Image 1 (cartoon, rainbow, N blue to C red):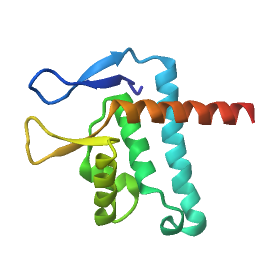
Image 2 (cartoon, helix red, strand yellow):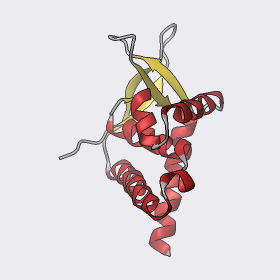
Image 3 (tube, rainbow, N blue to C red):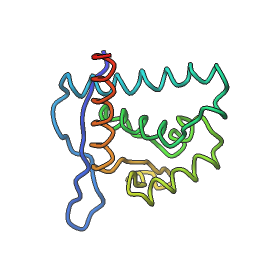
Length: 143
């Protein structure tokens, strides 16, 4: 059984931000993560129609992957985010840089292995994606 957790990044004085539990894994957060995962799966299936290069949205795919990772407690490395975008690494890295400049994500070095870099959603980005997921679910349910 998959365990779902929700974390929020809270900086401590003079230290890098750390992952701390926001709330217990409850049904609304689990449902949001499942909706985002299903949406990503459908996007992959949709790409079979015209190919990922024509219908791609790499930044959004990475944000959704980070959203699911944030809820489930799964760290998302830069490499994993690039894979989630389904685009070449150079393209993905450009999008990562743009998202960081816009305040949607930030980079965080692994505390044990400084060669590893993880991506974290900012709180504002996390809340915005959660709101979008809720709107998507409401729209599909009432449609």
